[in-house]
Length: 87
Image (cartoon, one colour):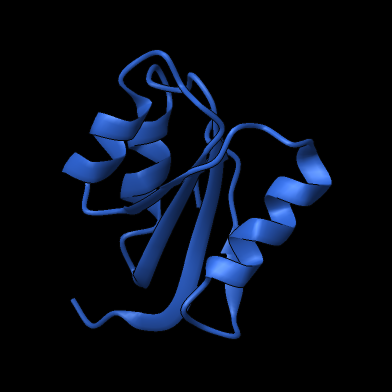
């Protein structure tokens, strides 16, 4: 499958029960980034297993976490998906 030059971003914290499906739904993106707020479940392990880049950053609030994720994106085009959403 040809990957699109887009960064798919998922902000997460303790989302192990839903994140795998979200990650599978954005496999068309050539950069998948999970910004984790300090999960205490398997969220980070699942993200890494699904070949996502993971940045762990203690939750500073939604706006600041979103801005961090945009700075970490490899591409100008981004798609932000909640951990419980599917594309």
